[in-house]
Length: 376
Image 1 (cartoon, one colour):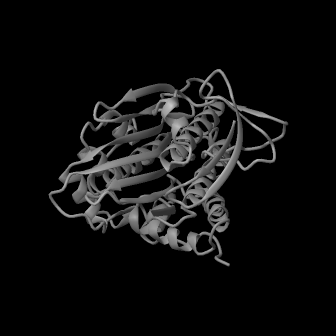
Image 2 (cartoon, rainbow, N blue to C red):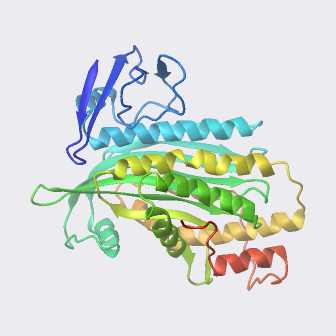
Image 3 (cartoon, rainbow, N blue to C red):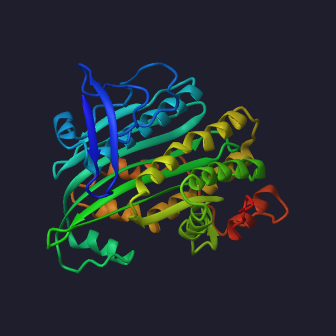
């Protein structure tokens, strides 16, 4: 089966050769063709490659996906399903005790998702990797959240929409392993004149409990490499955006040591940029897990980790726009929206660490974001 894919929104032409398998989720890649449909491969070492490793069936039925191979809705869904599977399997290799629970759910108002959660492991206290592919009508409250971001939508309207994204938050057990969060998403809104406004958003950021500059440099360099493939102006721009976005104003500190964050990107090359960033998650994070998962720690360090998790909860529930948008969307699935919350967190009244302690040194960086790598 030869597919010539012309994206109506991105004005991009792809060609791919796929042999249909019995399972609708399997395709065989013929080397020499351009990989399309948003499916990514880490290596192409053999003459053919069979892809059947999604954590569950796609949210959209296979017949619909095959009927619209040129549509960005299809391309994005297949990409995020693949990113979810690759990340989940990479985490499972580090966890000897438990595996991901896979929950494929349907949203009565349109669409659904695949939520993968790992809990109470030896390495990962809680790890959530969620795919959502939803559509329907945006109510005024959800539209108001978009208008607050600068979208020029009129109040009081009800607009048809489509949204697809992958998001993850990993809460490790060891305080020397940092938490990572990433989210990459695509959005379409059909306006009253039947034109479609579309954009991409997302980012990846790191939240350590103890500052390790070598880890922060590795993490930021991985993201910069992904950005530089597309535009060398991206990393410094999106690094600053990340520092500004993941800010807890009432604490006067950032949530972590940053990363990249962007929203409302609608240039023709944005999809390939988003794909590169999503594929950079594993090489940016897994080496840090492997490096620190067996580090020794004590009760004091564990207590500090739980206090920092409290800050994480504060940001997500008070400031995060994605959480607010999800909660205001009809048919919101709260289990999936709140999967980012840790199993355990603490709050101490007016807690301030000694500035000369390791905890104080982290706090100083959170209050004054640092440039971790040289911008060339």
